[in-house]
View (spheres, helix red, strand yellow):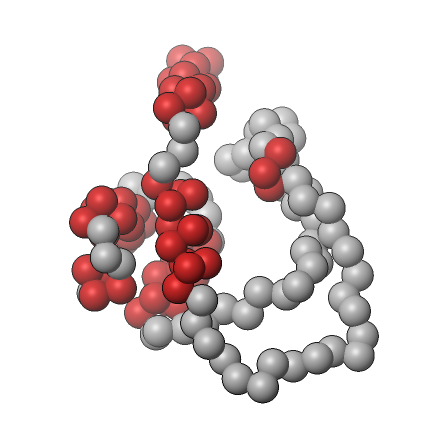
Amino acid sequence: MLSEIFEQPKVVAHWTQIFDAMHENRGPNTWDYQWLYTCLANNSLIAVPSVNLITNIGFGPDATHTTEADAKFMLASAPMRFPLRHPSSFIPLRSMDRHRVQDMISRPILSRMSSKIRHISRQFLR
């Protein structure tokens, strides 16, 4: 199914590995991979508001996974503008899909190394 959705074999392999791990209970304690799988399997569209409506409070020493804050996830929130203006039609933005996929699989080498070092050090500290 994934090869029908994504053009690049690297992306298909990335998501296959994640979804297989989640199915086999080897993945992280999280909800978002299951949600993404459900959306992909049902050919869902996701509405993205024109402003960020939430503040991510899930960072810190007591967090399950994100013990260190990452600036790219610390976006300022803004109130929704009223009255709402609904679009006259829905058009999937494949460019947004490609950009999001690229962000997920192409993290800079220093970022990947830093994450791996933190993960390994946590294993030794347990």
